Image (cartoon, rainbow over all chains, first blue to last red; front, side):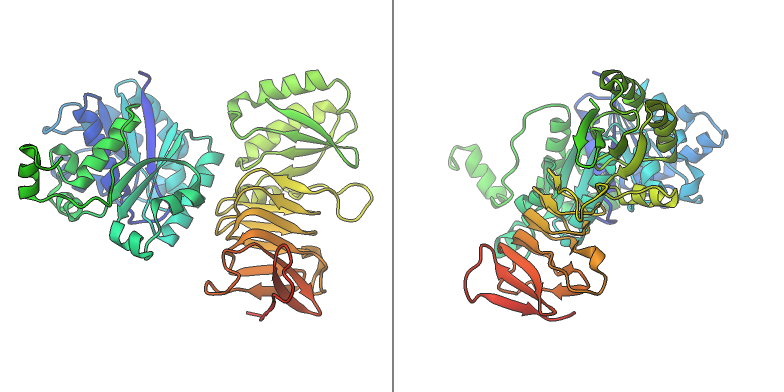
Length: 267
Length: 227
């Protein structure tokens, strides 16, 4: 399989790009791929915290670009999962510390050693986003079902198309089926009608996501929550598996219902 | 593959597909020049990039390696990428559809696509969009504008009329725009309006912006207030 470089982006901030990057990277590594997640958000790094690797940072991507170390010295190996690595970025620099050409070279270097390179992009459409996307072939666009997030995702998709990224897939995050049912939130079909790109995942709004981010342990490490399953499904679809989309409206079964199902009573 | 297409007013439209990698420009332009023979010599050319973003390097390369060697004159650089439009305008290049040498509005521009947020089409003539015009997209037309999909973005028909009333109209199969501009007039619409999400025609009559069902249903006309 040829190495794949995927930028995870959104336009609007706070929609779950970093969480999605961490969880999808972990799920891809668990399924046997060699994966590196690169924090492309210079000056506002978060990927290290979400992945629980912040206390192991020695060198950053910017150090490598400034010639203070080699690129492979910036790699942090996740001890909990084989084949999962992260490259942190600098917190004390600005977006100008990295150029598009440098990112293209970094991605070319990483392609030699990894099956998947996932780049966590900063929010916005300025240089930070363009640099993060420069070295990628493909894109995952994350949005929440809110009008403002969808409009920004539409803008980003237009820019990604103009930068010749392909394929571009959509992840709709933080879906609340009850709100959709009441007509208080856009449904996934409404979002797809506006954005007109392929859907690769739907993530239900799940408090386990916040908990796992605070603990620095991606959900896909082992949690069986619905959000975790949704992230694992996205990783499987990225590798070409045909996984049906989860029915988010079906109520989550409690402990006793699951036992009943196990004994054949829930069919 | 790059296509060359004859248009009214002896203009040749050079269509550069969005999916064509920039790295392949040179070889594809060489092929186009080879197949076109001497058609391009002395022609007025409109370069159509679709929604592709264009850099300074691309403009320079196209001029020196394609436009000038072919003997053509590039009269228009069409892209729906707003940042590229600004770049081209700063270079003094025309970013709107070329007008025929004579005649008033010119031919219609048909966009077989949706316009995304941040994309912008400007045309001297009528514009027909077969997809949606999303929130944040813009269309400026000296003539009429027809949107067969959903209209969320900003459209300005008859934009060359200045403050005068224009006879241009805006037609939408699904009207969900909060504002429509025709000539020097602006009409605004609320989400709770009867016309929201319906198929409508918007025009200016006696100085007021009017919205009606399309096709016309007798007696169902509403005058929009100025915002």
